[in-house]
Length: 213
Image (cartoon, rainbow, N blue to C red; front, side, top):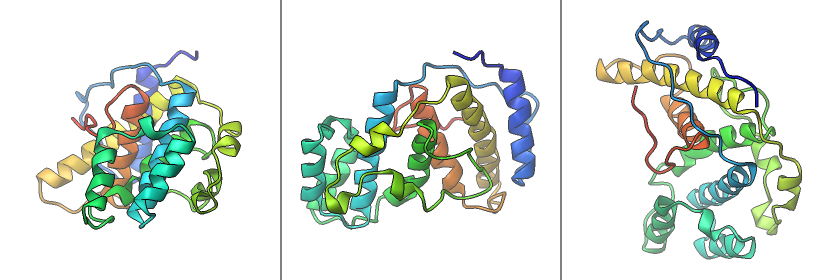
């Protein structure tokens, strides 16, 4: 395990904040609390389940989704909120009405955490190549190709990006409190959804992430 330096991480985060066009957090802004990085298989399972949920937000039939999850032993990898979401669709809710499409940015971070996605670009959106790394659900592809291509990153790298997200979402929260337009050149959900995934990687709750700033 590589030693993590919170002071160096904050210096890096401030450089990212500056290059992304965000305001700098105040000097008193606390460092993040270090947690334990989840194991590789848990990160893989979360990415695979989330991919199914996102596909359902684009009208993948829920019976097909549940069947794929069950066949591949992933039904327990859905969160309570995701199970309720699928039930809501079954009861007539519009698949795109709960914001799950936005979690594509959280999925991007999970792909990054298992070394599929390249370095995180905080000034841009996720890349179209994301879908190619994941199983082709239309062809009912199983997860073996995906799992064989993953390698969990060092926890220090995840902590670096979590600190960056912590600083960037401070700028978003400040803009919201002041009724100002979002800072930077991309929509706020990118920062919040990436932070959701990074918080979860270090032990947080997926459905109820700690968004304190």
